[in-house]
Amino acid sequence: MTPLARRLLVLVTAVLLLAGVGTGIVLHAAARADRANQPRSGGPGVNAGKVSLDQKGRLMFVNAAAGPHRTAVASVPAGDPDSGRTAANLKCARFYAAAGTGVCLQSVPGVLKQSNRALLLDAGLRTVRTFPLAGNPSRARVSPSGRFAAWTVFVSGESYSSAFFSTRTSILDTRTMRLTPSLETFAIVRDGKPYHASDVNFWGVTFAADDDTFYATLNTANRTYLVRGSLSRRTVTTLVENVECPSLSPDGTRVAFKKRILSRTNLWHEYVLDLRTLRETALAERHSVDDQATWLDDHTLAYALPSDGKIGGSDLWSVPADGSGTPRLLIAGASSPAPL
Image (cartoon, rainbow, N blue to C red; front, side, top):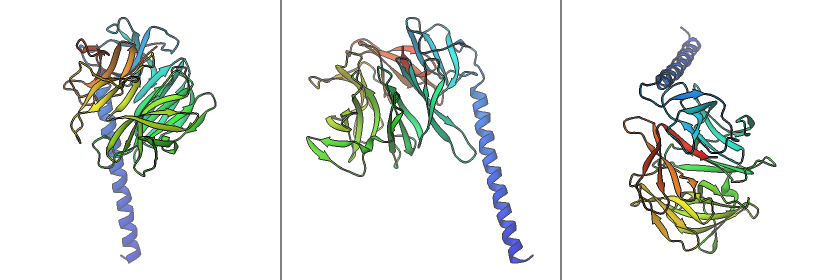
């Protein structure tokens, strides 16, 4: 065999091996997804049906229960969350909605690379516009008026514990379709002075009702800050330290957030910050909450916790926002709550 023929043989063999590995990965993922899509006895009742953002008094979420509607956007009556859930023909990794506008973050597996995208949705959950994402979906929010949508992705690494942790947060004006690809282009004021650094990361946007003010997490120099931002001025200003994944209350006076307990650990407790006094109130939930909480109303917060004994599963819990009471299970097998 000539040297050229040997090189060609090695090349063909390598291509076949790579193809086999890729096929094996896809088949394994498909088999795992197929098992997760099989309904389990004793699970919640989930039926396909019409789901829209015009249905007032409903609570939207991503269905995490095993079965054919796993990861579908679903809804239940807000006053009776234990009732049977109605699932739409739309599947998301993250979801949020307000004022007839929705945003769905999707991850579509591929042979060599996962495809990630954001879908801007109308009230009927129809796709208005699609935007490619630079990484894995993490957070999604829509402003109270529906005018702005925001999403955060991991652009490298898959968790906060990753040594190569990095995020990208984008904001979309749904009226003009102008996209701000990264909040890192905004001017930063830290401790009253202009601030510039190469390690800046943002995540967890939450919007005020004025269609200009927003809050988010800024991470730099191994510290996290709550920042108040202005969309029109393209600026953010630090307020307090050790705040992650803020969520603004409907009345605009408080921010729920997760606070890191002990430096360099992935343990977070949920707090509420009074924006006028900057006084923090610890909530009754004592489990580590790695989520951006959602206000169901001015008095109650909802958030996801991992399901006991279910890898990758999650349940929605709720707790009073004033630090009283005890946590209660809101919806089993669910995530990404959005009250209508």
